Length: 270
Image (cartoon, helix red, strand yellow):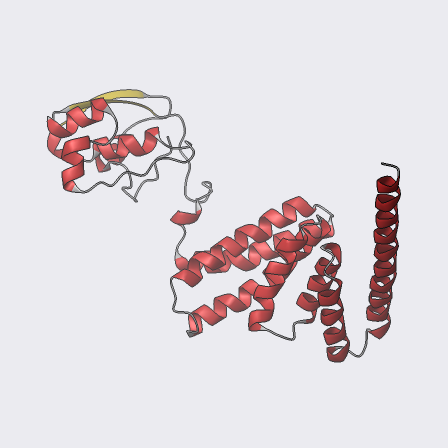
């Protein structure tokens, strides 16, 4: 168990005790029941850490008295409060500059400041062709953006500022997905970008490539032609992609004809 001093997220009395302990020390102490009324709920949380798909129970007062919290020993402490003995072994102490804090421990400003750092980390990993790791860095940055945007009203200045940070990261994330052949995810993410920036060239190009991969040739051509109007400097690249779609259409038609011919030949022999 990790105990972060100053936050009182577990039991305040634990913080008081460990401050007086030496590394490697094992201490036993008894605490008055008035100071540990929250222990059953803290213990329940600790027991369920790491367990997947926990069944969330309604914890209104009536339910608490009739059903308890799911652990017989803890239910007994709730119904019959008593003094509790704790045994703690202090394994390690880390100072604030040594401890890697979890996301929920960061302030709003610290989270905002972390977004460009994660983006640059992703860019560096992408440059090293470590695409899975780059995707993870971008995904972490996007998660922070989403958390912060939920706190704001859509369209407000703060919401817009965070969304502007999010869009280029989402494009980079989509590029990682494109390299992995996850075409429908790419289309979805590019749609999100184009919702706010309808002429975003990177989003149009990556969505076009994803439509080709998912074999939506009409939509791919539509994006490429739109891009050709927006960017006059890359007609050869776009024409090459359009020609590639044309060839793929022809190959698909031939494959369909061969499949149809094979089906008729097979039926003719029965």
